[in-house]
Every structure is written in structure tokens, then in C-alpha cells.
Image (cartoon, rainbow, N blue to C red; front, side, top):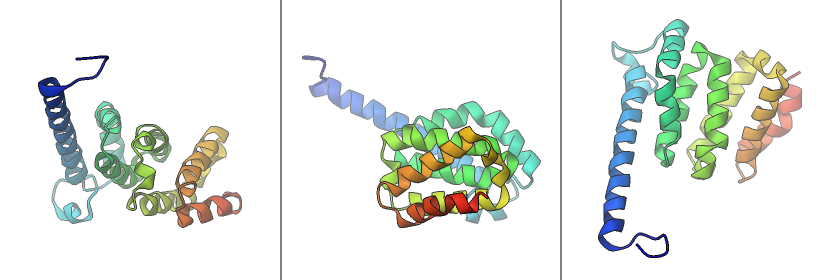
Length: 174
């Protein structure tokens, strides 16, 4: 190691360790994503979270694990977590939005998730759903600011649907 950099065999070992850790994290994310019923094809299976109450309990029981998944460095993990949160909205709309905001403006932003082509449509769909079904959670000024922050993140990179929603937001929240 010279000047704080890792070289040679140490570097290769560090890369292998990182890849192995992210593989485990990705596998865990997939287990939760598919096992919960968040993926449309898995909703026909017998073990899925069907009611808001079971979703709420899932959120409570798996909160530490979901936080660890959010800290991933892989946009694919972030994407499945976002889709899992979308599925879990009925369980606790406010808590899910707060977790989504923390993910999108923290680790996911750090890794450039908002630049991914799969990201913007899901986020716009979720926010549209929130405004339609759970508008009251945005009466809180802090959460309303968080909503604007998320939309700005996606509109600043040029996602037109996010920009349109950001401009329509004042009228939509009336």
C-alpha cells in the first residue's frame, strides 16, 4: 500500500470482497422483493403481503434490514428497494415516503440512481399515487419539502415527467 492506495494482490482481494458483499446484499434484496409480492409475477404465490396490516408489520420487522439495503452501492439494489417501497405504501404511507426520501436523496443519489432510465417512471408513478391517495401526509411542511426535493433531483437530470409533476405540484396539493 503506497500513499493510501491499495495495489496488486491487496487491491484484487478488496475488489473480490466488495463484489462478494454486494452479491449477498443483492441476493437479500431479491429475497425480500420477490418474497413480499412486490414483483407482479410473485403476487400469485401463496406467501405475499396482502393487507395493509401485514405490510405495516413487515415494515416494522424489517426496518433495520431495509436500512442496510439502502446503504448499498448498487443502483439495482436501490431500484428493487424503491419498487418494494412502492408495494408497501398501503402499510404505512408516511413512513414509506420518509424512507423513500432518505434513500433517494442519500445513498441512491450518491450512486446516481436518479440518472437510471428505470428510476424516473417509478418515482413519478409513486408520487402521483401519493398525491392521489395520501395527499394529507404532505400537509406537513417538512414532508412537502422532501417531496419537492425528490422531484427536483429527478427533474434536474432532465426527466420530463418529473419536471412536469414538479410544476403541477402546487395545484395538485390544493
